[in-house]
Length: 215
Image 1 (tube, one colour):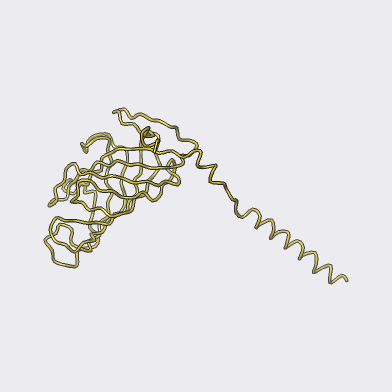
Image 2 (tube, helix red, strand yellow):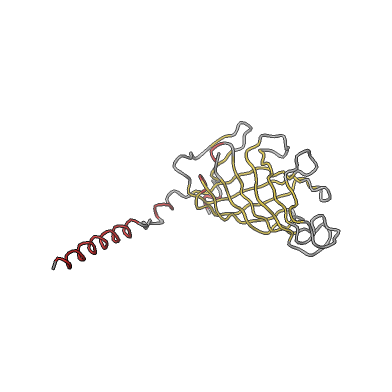
């Protein structure tokens, strides 16, 4: 009888402990708690790819394996850390940076470039200071406007989903320098510390778009 009690008590305790652990291991949260806080934000900034300056913002880390007259032959891999500014001039106020990579994904020669681009947009100013957006998609550079999906985010952009429209402002296809206007449209659930509006000194608003909110 004593042996049975010695075995039975630890068994009960272990089962009780297991049930407590399983009960606190996760928590189901109703999506309705988040949906009430979801908002749609429009952000505009300028992306600068700098090759000919003293400190290039990109580097080709995997040299092309084929001979080609393309400035970025098929299979090229590039790593970037490009500045994001409030205006088209690279000397205008810097609000963030784009860090990531892209791959040349077309075998066509010439300037008809197609890349697969993956990058994190990190904001360093204003309401979204410290927050990030993740972008991954196809970028056919020769097109006047390209669309790429937003696949996630952090900070004020938790649960982010949306898209970016990239429009070339100035491009040197042979040297590689480029300035691109980015318009970002993103649904997200902001962190509790973020406010709803912010004004930069030079007039750009990080704001919820009143027209898109009606969609």
